[in-house]
Length: 393
Image 1 (tube, rainbow, N blue to C red):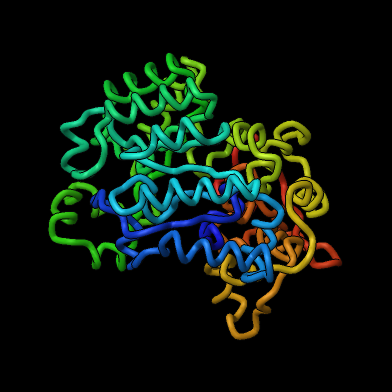
Image 2 (cartoon, rainbow, N blue to C red; image 1 turned 45 degrees about the vertical axis):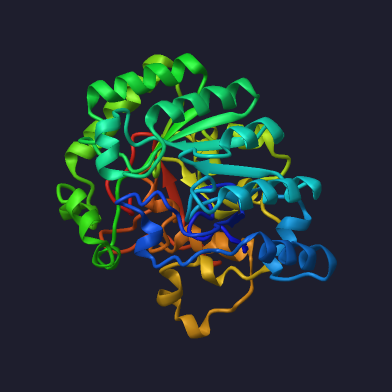
């Protein structure tokens, strides 16, 4: 079924996703398997859903964003071109296209990818490449398409007018050492890739418990730190190294949570008439409009973010993540406006996209234990390009 793009609100500008049958690629680090994903439905079920959406209405979130022709992600919890998914993917893209609904594709490639690339209008494709060496890939992603096939797909996509982002997600230094990283970045620049998105490997204790013996064995060298909040220094240093390579080659590089402006979202804004705001829209704005140490107020944040967020009420409770427990889940309304949600992002630091979790922002501290709160209840923040060391300035 087409659902909310859980976990990605304010990180990705796409509100919806469809994940089909369970993925056959069996990547050792698969978070969906660790979360007990059982499959998201077949073509017949999603066809019935879309007919309900356009005729009667269904889930308010899905109904609003489908009817207003926001993009749908294929797919976040499975690969749209893995065995058992290709046929549904091709049919669903045709159906969505007939309704004027665009698609954002996340994949490692596979059967049908070239056919879809040839038939659909220019779109953003996120192609995963955590390796540039097939021998390493085979140990961690045993059933996935080869690196060469992904390179062929990326070059073909760009030739057909699509925008391609390479997903180095997860980025593990041992999987893509310096020589491989340089080769990947050089090749990406030569074919015209729009950017590289990097994220650290994270597997919670529960996800690790649910892993197969084979997966735990394949990841034995990284599991000790994969569940920790602190990012190992070698991962941080490798991220900086790859960023420097990209800067030298003119390739946009984005690591999730970075305290710098980015152009990584420009392909989405160029190809899709409607997208959602992301936290980095405001980070970009602050870099262009704020001096170091200057105060930042909620009204500025709200104005920038609401440029691409709809009015009205939505069932946003599921997007509150840890904040539901902080606020008290039983007392949390089921329906929120996006403005209500922005208030959470502004000053509830336990939310993963709260501004003060980015080093560019910090609460304006009064002393070691408190910070400034205006009479209307909003916190006052400060901005710094160099970054703050903690949530308070």
